[in-house]
Length: 144
Image 1 (tube, rainbow, N blue to C red):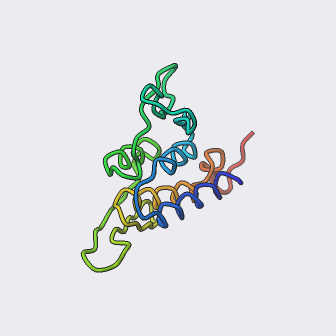
Image 2: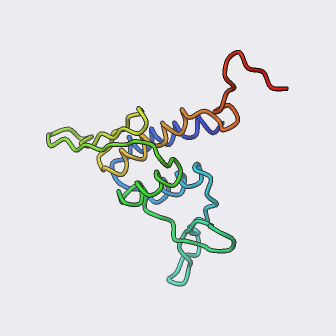
Image 3: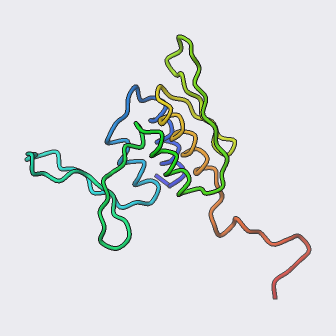
């Protein structure tokens, strides 16, 4: 599975999720380029370390609840795509998907605002051009 497909699959998982999910959090962080240490599922006791993400040298930071906390979702968006515009709306009606997010002209929806924002962010990142082709040369000019 290529990176674009992985991001779009995660966006669909965010929209399909009925509640925040730690496994989804870890998958989102991994897809965004973080090294993730997952909490073991076997032989778990009180002393088992929690999952986390690897940052800056040998510093382990607790894995953020990006699917549950809008502040963490916004900070991750600002870190991975600084300067991008985004919005989040809540619709007070009987619909199951009450939140609608828009990130760089890509939409997402979810039962929780952070899930909707994650879905929109992942779609926008999947649509983004790779860095090598993001700066094309002007027409009529050639490099020598």
